[in-house]
Image (cartoon, rainbow over all chains, first blue to last red; front, side):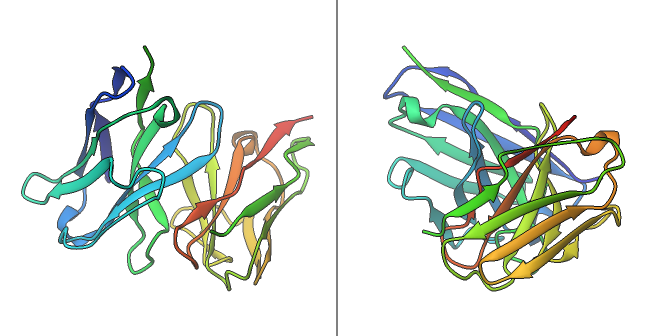
Length: 120
Length: 107
């Protein structure tokens, strides 16, 4: 069974940093592209970042470029999102999402999400 | 950036009724459109990709159609578990983007 389990969310002050993790199981993690997608409270979905299966290709939404860093450790079946210079606009549930095989940017499995709250 | 506009914002229907949800793109996305279902407190679930292909395990009562700028998700006969928020998403033009959602609620 495919499972994605996020962790690392919490309350952080404006300007602070947080590192999210996503533990994958039930599939060959190293074969899949992965993404982070976020959802502000009561709002819609926003794509945040992409990383290729090898980790060599990375993309970011303009809203987080220069502040967030996506990475992965295929030996540990884990995906990460380092978030710096956080602002209130980053408050959201952050989901890690697996891409549908051979279909970039369609997301066929999602974790349960981890809530990041940026507030003083 | 492609803007996806979903309508209506809320759809009030009864069990067994047919639901028709619309998604309009600000420019053509070809057939590169997906639909997701999100139940309260849960993660989104992929229903349809490439406008009309059902994802693995998705019941046949869900169908998608359209191309270019106008797309439709149809639920042929609403079951209790179908009352949720539905999002469309395009991947044709970077960055990938989502619509604002349509809430299907029980009438």
